[in-house]
Length: 388
Ligand SMILES: [Ca+2]
Ligand SMILES: [Ca+2]
Ligand SMILES: [Ca+2]
Image (tube, rainbow, N blue to C red; front, side, top):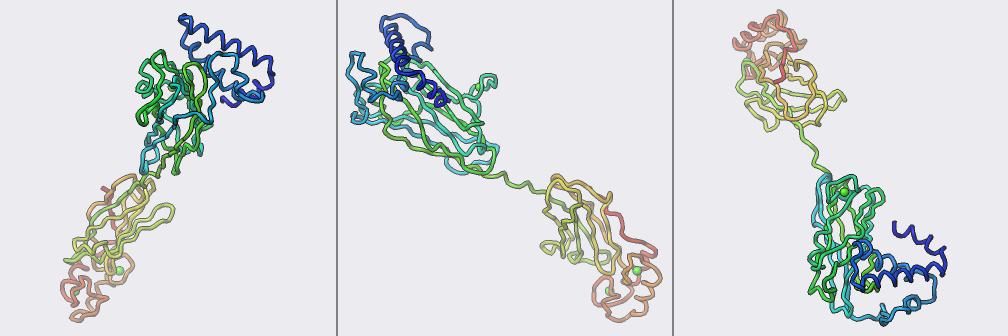
């Protein structure tokens, strides 16, 4: 946003710059005279006038500031060291959750003390994360937390700008010290701002560069020597798991693990269990299925009537179950009806070991197989298998 105003300044020409400089000089005089201008006046004079001077198409910046009596700073060879650093949470953060980046400043043996900081931080790619509004007031846009500045500027602070733009991926803030002693050495990094990002999609967001203007208390710039970038990475939410569980037993048997269970979605995705996972002799099963789909279940076993869920379809949004069921034996002629033909088939093989007539699977065709078929005479499948 600051950049967009520059072309207009250029077109004003040198006469406008002179006027601006005169205005700057008068503003500085107001401060020096001990008047009490509004905080915005205190802040805006050095911050807005200084960058204009550095970008005017005059031969050198030094010429534009010569009217002031103080020595002209030579930025490139200035002793001391200044550094801005972004530090972000390590590790992966779930999409939808919040990661934190902090802004630190490190000043080392500056000859002229720091009294103002203007920082422009772009973050990219746009849409990966959004800056969370620090003041909770949507009416004034999105702010970051500048509270940590009080550890740098002990004399108090004036905030000239504090605006994040999630649509364009920019964070802009500017703070001046209110009175106090300009800072020449921080004795290590000092945190000046806190930015909370909420992840919007799986990706990494980075703050790859900075445009910063550091100001001494007279409104002269101090060069930024070093910037350390950082960023945050967001990972997708774990896929929600849905389950269907139940118990299917086989009439006349002690081991129920041979039953086949299958649940299919309306989309045609099927989750078969043949045999029951883990070979549960008790007939217990548990299926992991895609969530938020409607499912129909069937249970089946050769020589037994099948079963089908009732109601047929059910939307599964979490952990669902079907009631325990016992499949009815005796359908040796597998038409899902137990009738005289089934009974006759068993009777014909009575005393043998024909597996096609051995309903209970004990290796012998005998009274146990005949009786279970007879007991289920005229029963028809699929039998009803209620959801829980
Ligand atoms: Ca706000
Ligand atoms: Ca039959
Ligand atoms: Ca048998």
